[in-house]
Length: 247
View 1: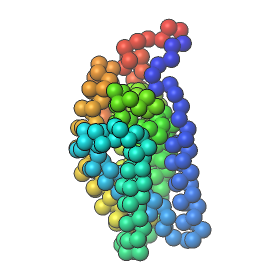
View 2: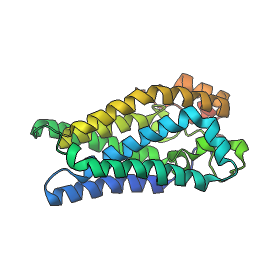
View 3: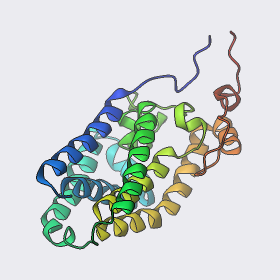
View 4: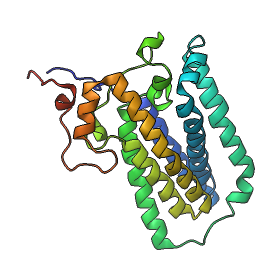
């Protein structure tokens, strides 16, 4: 059987993602109120919005600055600066925005909990097919001609990526909305609105980048797999990569 690009498994990000949610829910259950889960979700996605707004429009400048410095410089700038900086600001402001909510409605919480569990589950599945380099945006910062050979460069057409092109973006929305419904925190809806607002810019620039990088296979992927609404029948990776298994 011929091995197609994207066959690799990357359990690290998937397991870390699942463990983060389990840990937050357990701690909040012990203290008897929603604190850690809404804080984690708000900080994670607000940090993502900040990174996307500062990275995508300035991609060429970031690459020029990072080229002599390497991938560690990007991780320090992204995780150590932008993400942790955003998280600290939200943590310091948490006594204010955590009080900004609505009363508990059991039926709404059940719906939110189901949406959250489904979104986290599919997100774990999607992350299993990727790796830290792509999750942390390093593959975009260090394209194949950058000399950073350690950064994987592949078009992933496995798992949920056979049904929809952007499973993580879809599950991101589900995680934010589900957590908002479970915890009753309005601020999470503000973060969701900010995420949706920048997503149009992000998708446009990201797809343009991927067209240049992967050429005809990605063009076929665009034709065969929808952007956000999953298709009922998964695409065959061989149809995307232009080859068939020899088995």
